[in-house]
Length: 213
Image (tube, rainbow, N blue to C red):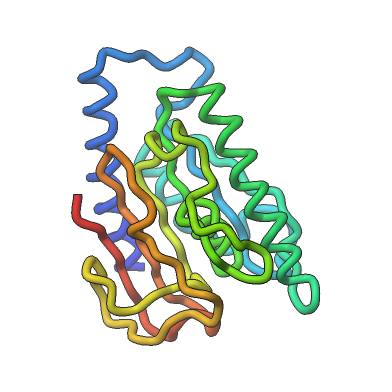
């Protein structure tokens, strides 16, 4: 829990930076749009909902009252259906975040995925390849989504990479899937990327990744 609270403090700093930039530009959100929207994606074989991602989502909502949460709707299947599930999940992340960014172009976005949920967010925001479900090497999310995203928090990410220059933490093992390259993801705003390794498909220890901005 202490690690989650520390992560939340970092998240608050990054979100605050984006809020300040939006205010500085004199832009106003539509009345029906939240200041912050957090998208959550659950782990493998968990029923539709937020799964284990709910813990951090609720902490964010406590820290930022009025934050709206939205679950990524995808199968989260395991076994032989895993790759197809990841592919559908990537498309769901793209579709849902793009729709929100069009509807609420001045709102701040936070992404939080757990296990397979982390993988689909990693793929959508950072690109692949992540074979067999993704052969593209470029980010797939919209420009507006990218510009409005203040934080990406990934737990138990199968695409975790050790040894990147902005890593903070003590995890050394990589994930079991094709590794991601977070530097692909470029935004005009300060961005927090956190990968807290919390299950067997990533690494048994904890890691916090914070890129220089």
